[in-house]
Length: 313
Image 1 (cartoon, rainbow, N blue to C red):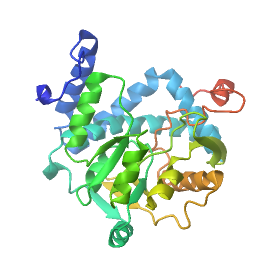
Image 2 (cartoon, rainbow, N blue to C red; image 1 turned 180 degrees about the vertical axis):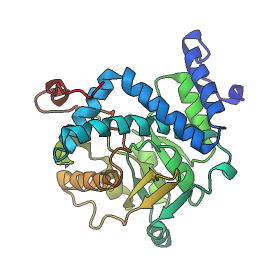
Image 3 (tube, rainbow, N blue to C red; image 1 turned 180 degrees about the horizontal axis):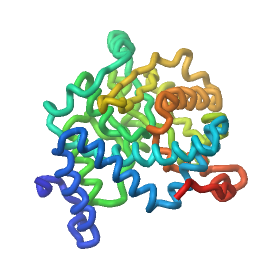
Image 4 (cartoon, one colour; image 1 turned 120 degrees about the vertical axis):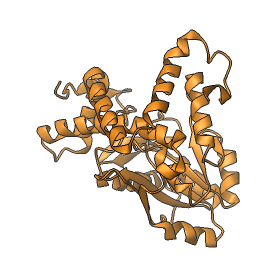
């Protein structure tokens, strides 16, 4: 079945054999009962917690910056939970790509669907503002059972993995739009399409402004407001979380009013506030492993270099 994937030149090179082995393993594990998948994913997260010391420090730094009101002990526990949730998230990506509908579509509920329906009745395109939750692929897969949704993505540097990602997402997604292709996004939005867009990572100072994220100034891309201005689309936060019983909750927030305002900092602050609101529902179910605050006036990764605190080993 892997050979049905459209392969790029060199993706079968021996250097990518570990990738293909990992993909084959995921294909096998995803067929196990859901409770087993959750257990294995949690074990994978605990292993990564032990092995990925540098990423563990990044998570600890992010949580210290964003949750100063919590005690050191509470944040150390959150670090462990972040890795467990992201370990499960690896298997949830595989679920989105390969799990048959009859083993997946009964495991979720959708909240706030009326906001999408209203936009469609008005003939408006919709920017589904999202974030890098562990359920990154699974949430859109479930939503796309109700609505066709285009995805904005960044091509992966590993050609073997890129081929598998494209094949997996093609099962359920509309168009896959490279994140720098603004013209294609605007065109689709003007035609009333829905685009899933996650502007919650630090892409450097170019096309970004500093705006508060959990009370910390963070380089935030201005593209969300620009897309809304050029297309007339509505902007709605879309978040997805795993519940304690192993089911999933998809939530669409009401559209942002009077957006964009024309003030880049104000607009980026509102975008960050929506993302923060989604994260705060289940704070450990977010990819805190990324250096969200790497861009800094005093130098790249300044906050991460200064913070020497590590999580417990």
